[in-house]
Length: 75
Image 1 (cartoon, helix red, strand yellow):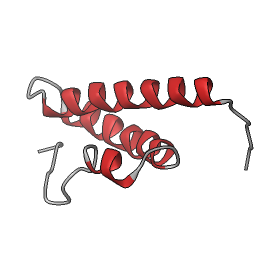
Image 2 (cartoon, rainbow, N blue to C red):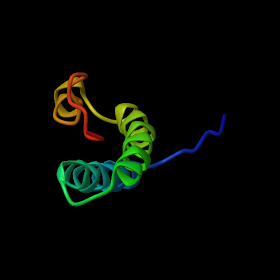
Image 3 (cartoon, one colour):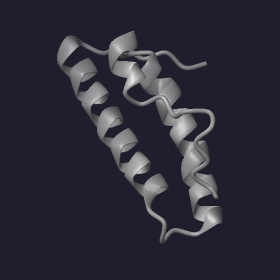
């Protein structure tokens, strides 16, 4: 495990970067032109970034990025 100390400004910037990355990945997962293998890779990366964002975000902010379990981006 790695620990990092951020000041308030850096924490806000990291929060912003993670949100934008999650938005981009959600957009890509909804794109029907992408191949199944690419969507699987994006989905696994999404899970990692989502867990990082969960450490900074409030539950209300986090709920915007929860993917429904029945949603299958790879099909």
